[in-house]
Structures are given as C-alpha cells and as structure tokens.
Image (cartoon, rainbow, N blue to C red):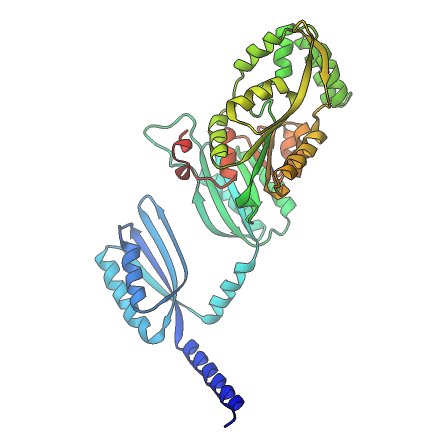
Length: 431
C-alpha cells in the first residue's frame, strides 16, 4: 500500500473514532440548591473529576446563605448514571438538594450560538430598591428583546437595625442581545429615572468599559455644591445683578460669552483674600473624597474642565492631586483687587469637549475610555463626546439629552457605573 493511501486510511479511521466518541457523550445540567456549606463545590468537583467530566458552564449565587449552583457537564454515557448516583449521595449527606436535566446536542449548540451576541450592562442605583422599581426596569429590558444573564449587587447589604444615613443600593444586570431600539431604550430609562428616583446607566459590555482611563469633571455644582461666581457676587454685594444676567442667558437672550464677560465685570474691586476664604470653605459634594481616593489608587487621570475659575480649581487640584485643571482666570491688579476682566480663552461648552479630546490625545487614551461628569447645559458637549457621559444632579434638559444620569446618591455613585463593588474597595469602600 502506498504511503498516501495509508495516511488516507488512518485519517478515515480517526474520523470514525471521533464520531463514535461524540455519540457516546451526553450533556447533563446539574442544579444544586439549599443552605450553603463550606466545601460543597470542592466535593462536587471531586466526583465530577473522577468521571472525567468536562465542565461546559458553571455559575453560583449565594443570597443570605442560600446557595444556587448550576453546572453543565459533558460526560461519557456509560459513566453518567454512576456519577449522578454519587452526587445524589454526597449532596444528601451535606443537606442540600440536587436535580439533573439532560441537554440535547441541538439545544446546547443553540445556546452556545447565542454567546456571540452583544452584551450590555445596565446599572441601577438608588437610596433603596423596591420590587416595583426593579419590575419596571425589567419590563424595559424585556421590551427591547434583551435577555438577563445575571444580576449582581455592587453595594454592601443595608442594615435593618442600624440604618446608615448615606445608605445606597446598586445592582447590575448583565444583558445579552441587541436592543431593538437603543435610543428609545435610553429615553425610557431616563424617563423612568425621573418617575422612580432611580439612576440608570446602560453601557455596551466591551473592553473599553473595563479600561476607562481618564475622567473629566465640571466643578461648580458637581465637585462642589456652589456656583463660585455667585459666592463672589454675594461677598461683593452684587448678587442680584449677577443673577439677573444669568437668568437672561438661560432665557437665550444673550450667549454664554457675553453673560460671562458682564458678570465678571461686576466683580471689579473685590479683594483676592475673599477668594481664598471662599476656597477654604467650599461645600464639597457628598462622595467626592471617596471617589477621588479610589480613582487615584486605580491610576485614573483626573481633570477639571470648568466654566468657573482657576483659583478654586487649583485649590481642589492640590486637595485631591488632580492632574489637569482648565477653567477661567480672573485678572488681578497690583493692588490685589479683581480688575473685572478675565485672562485667556473662556472655557465654555465647546471648549470643554475640545479639552477632553486634547487630554485624551496627550495621555494616549481612546475616547471610548474617557468619562465626563457635569450638571449644566455647557457640560453636554463633553458628556456626549466622552465614552461615558454622566449627568450629575443635572437640570431636566441636560438629563434628557444625556445617556446616563446620577441624581439619587453622591458623586461616588460614579464608581458603580464603572463596575466597582463596595466589597472590592477595602477601606476606601467605607461610606
């Protein structure tokens, strides 16, 4: 026999062996429920290992010491009966329940074929979560044709006997599929946020979500609970005049640049020492300390992009080790008084978006890896430019236009949108 014929015959025999081996295998779904026991998973795996079972999928959840463990195995038909008998004896001995379900080759292939579908993460945050609120979120998910693969809690469990003042609840849905209308789903979630008081973040579960590297914050009414120009105006006795110009700008009667120029002019003659006093008493937004500590520990680059003033931005920069600060600089005369003019280019909405892109380029960060957080209309351009734009305690028009919003908790709620769990944060995870 010629060598090529020998090779052909061996290939044929190998194919027959593979087909025969496939025919001898079957899939069995194992479900174990009951009170969680130390060493249960190890005991089950020990039995499966003795029968050379292949684990096709595995998942486990533990809620208040109540265990649900699912294992899908592929095993030789000749061994499946003995394997199930041993598992039944062992789980009975350990005081838990077990069930078995055969899974056909066709059913398995159909299930495995869905693994290539898109995945999304829906994060839901509130001070507390009720069944009706979760039901409404689940209805939106189902209406878009998405399947819930898993649900996990990101926050610590609340105490009933000793409720904490800053309690919050956050769960994360892992979704599979493609929304039938993603834009409509975003609008539904934003409307639901207004109705229920919950916050939602819908993100595609791709590598960029796990590798955010740059976060840019607005300052006034975001990092701090104040508008610095209003505080300066109060100290200078011109608050009513400044407020009137602000209202005119909000009505669309004048643009931001004219509004800013006219308001700064009213500050002429204010001593710089007043600015220092205001800076030292800035009302820091709830959760800012915790958020900044975690971001710095995890290596994020942090920027302030503000339509406020550099004097206050630099104070926060020193306090938190912020990497970049871009804001408006007030001109100071030799007498230590404000001149009523500003220096350089005004940082408005378009400028914020441009600066976000510039910093990302400098840091060699893909725009999809960037985050922007702000509350006002002049923050919208950067919120829409960033990979993850978060409207924080925002005005209604801003919230409607943004893709994610955060209003129910403090600024550290941003961490949950990034996938952090309280249990992973150690001391920084403490409220």
